[in-house]
Image 1 (cartoon, rainbow, N blue to C red):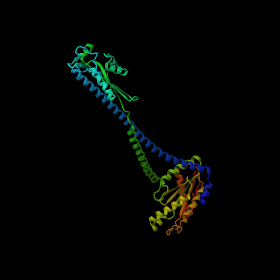
Image 2: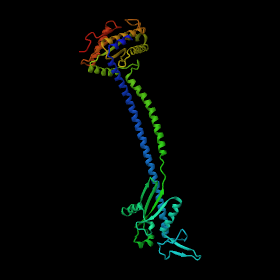
Image 3: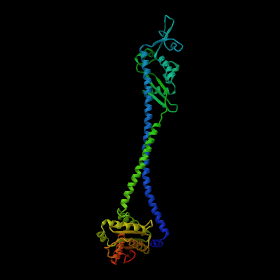
Image 4: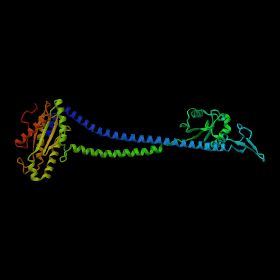
Length: 436
């Protein structure tokens, strides 16, 4: 503990705070990337569901329009069929009543028949029958039929504003239908043309109509129901909610898998400290930062003394447990968030100490040596002590132009010097203390 305190006393508190801020930023960036990923997936799912809801709503609207169109056509075709039957029969005779009076627009000759009982029958032609049926439909079903023309014989058959547009589209543009849906009043408007047939010429030939001419049209008007989009919205809301739950669960599971994969790529499986791959990346980053800012960068290389003999004596399982205990001890000694402890390979460990002088790193190394010996792990085959010990090499880089490989070579030389001079000791590079 005292070694760590001494090391920290050799550092600038500002530098340590800066490094903590940098690490915090890296953590935030990692979580931001994950959050961005899930936000993107959720936004895509929302886009799909909203798009599906809009499409289904539009299809529902089109289906409703198609129903109203087919309904209008059915009404129109039925009316045309009745008119055709009437025309082919030469009209039908019905008793004159308060509701049905003789048609003033028909030739009186042959229009009325006086019965022996005093009753009078009057001829009802197709146009008159259309009006009677329209009145009955309006009273019972709120459906409006209107026979009309641009040149009506009967003034009441004059076309309204939209009917004029419809009739002109028939005659001038050759359209076969005219329709629109007034959403505000929830009313459907439809009109189709009346084509002059052979039976129609009996009455309409004197008006100048010929076979196949458009002599007017019949409009069909009826109220509509507002479309309910609630089923679409409800079903898609459920699907959206289920999707978000699935994304959340899948995201949680995927996050766990990604976390495990990240750990596998960065953590040594045996000792649960960082592995050589992560060490190489971290050292490279800190090396260039040190060279850019001329801050000291220390590295400690640790080797377990006579570890091969330990394995031969106690077995590899005991050797693995020994390495785990040593790794935990080193990790517990080096506590700054900017410091790195990693397994260098085999029975070797490495420590990276940013912003740490040679003197400070020597103190840390001596503390590790002492604590490992203090574990009192028996080692009968050791040639230096009856417990497991470690040798440590220390080197400090001060930002001079050089390669990372040179730094690793120097710390390896320092470790060799410690082992060559009796092991269970800390040594710095016996040559220059800085890279030239």
